[in-house]
Length: 511
Ligand code: NAD
Image (cartoon, rainbow, N blue to C red; front, side, top):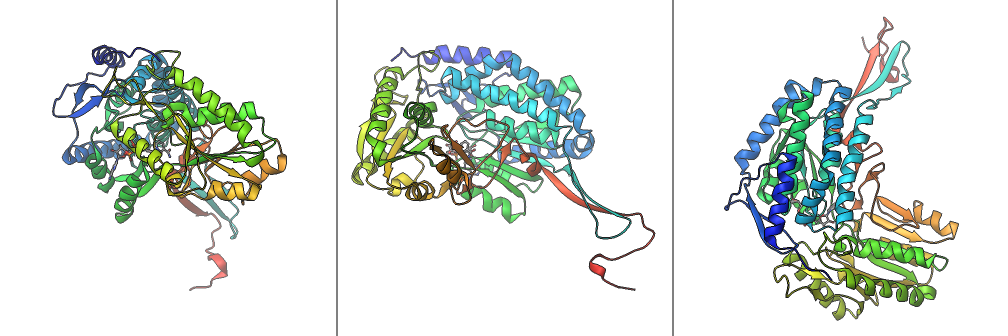
């Protein structure tokens, strides 16, 4: 375990990183507390946006959309995102500092999150020349049938604390090349990273001649997000967070027939089959379950291991957790593998889940204790926990946003798939096997029911090239790569008649 930095030191480091990114934090004691989970201390008060402020930001973004951005050629829009990518590269270390200070990620994961932003900018720049529509054979002679993709409007982006900047970039880089403007409501737990990103994008806009209001930032809490969801000028609300949040946001947006893209909670499992390479599976499972202190939407929360290899595999996992317990602490220290939980609420939820699991007959195999309490009484560092469960009880079916890995065993592969799918969420799933039939079955229509299904890698750590998102209570949205861009545009079907006749479709005769 390591010595923790002081709140004052972290404030200095954050101020310097923000300044290098061109952001000037206004210290507003009455605003949102810019807190660091490393010590639990408050660094700044960040001004919050009230509903009128949201209305003004949406109005400005809407005007920028209507008056110039939608008519700017897509490859030219790509220039803005190209410049943003350059600035993100130049400020990778500053942004990673802020991600660590605000979200508690270890250095390599914080750098990885910024790399993801850079990658999606590269992807979006290429996409700016590839917003293809299809041409279909018309059933009528002398007619052309085709589709055109047009910019949609203002995209309201609501983000969660645990990927404070990557999720913003997935949405924003793609939305901007699609010709949309963006209003961003960052997590109330991560307003500083948002200030930095907004400042960099503002600089990219100034450098490339894009309208300043192509992006607006509205820091605030739930009410600020709700005001964004309710505004009829927001064509698409892309909201990332808990299932509870999705249940509140989706009906509000639906009530005004707006579009919603939801990226909600996960309850991800890995199946470990008898043929699995157990060393490889151990690494995949331990990173998936304990990485980011269990605070990824794709964190592995359930392990479904075959009875014949359960003991041998659990020995390896428990030994690895023992090594992890030595490396909990200051996320800026390169030796650290597990940083803090985001706050007291997350710790309370973890304790309550462990108590419920015990009441359901669970046995703790590793971890679960709080660490560094004396050094930082307002911060919440925990040993990631492994709990063997007699059955998939209600607490196992819930997402607790903390590092708890529940272990279940199975006898035949159908049972493993049924356990895997037997939860309300459907984000990510993995199988570790060297049996090709099992691997293919896991990916088949009657296999994993998740938006992301993997073979011989863990549940977390997706690449930006694929579409990211999940089914069931995870919300059904897809973001980032592949053709996820289509959610940010409107499709027009066009029929052009160059025949000089007016044949009606389906052979209808009229007049
Ligand atoms: P959260 O639901 O508490 O908050 C997420 C965001 O939604 C915040 O910006 C918050 O202010 C806003 N919000 C909350 N209630 C709202 C409301 N009624 N109206 C409008 N906005 C509202 O989530 P969190 O604790 O920040 O993040 C953790 C959760 O996010 C986990 O459930 C995790 O699985 C999920 N998550 C999902 C993905 C994904 O891609 N599927 C990615 C990251 C996090």
